[in-house]
Image (tube, rainbow, N blue to C red):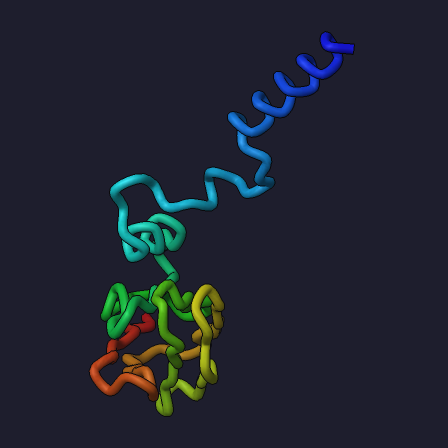
Length: 127
């Protein structure tokens, strides 16, 4: 009987030491990194992608060819829009982590902005 109690106690100690949580350590920010650094790591830019960070687009200017689908992803902590009257698109409000895509079918330079944050502006040149 004592052996069973001792075995149960050792098992409990081992489980507690290993942690009983099902949360993945990868879901936690790296030690010493800020939430903004973690967002950058999870939002890598591609040649036809814009990233919305808190109060800025990255990059502010993009050059693509006719027929390119450009995707904007909100990598910030606040909601944003991606809007262009000239090109005819409006993402509506994008919560953090959400994306919106638009295919450019004609050449030109198209300015865009965030309707929520007036300083967030940029342009796309389509050739």
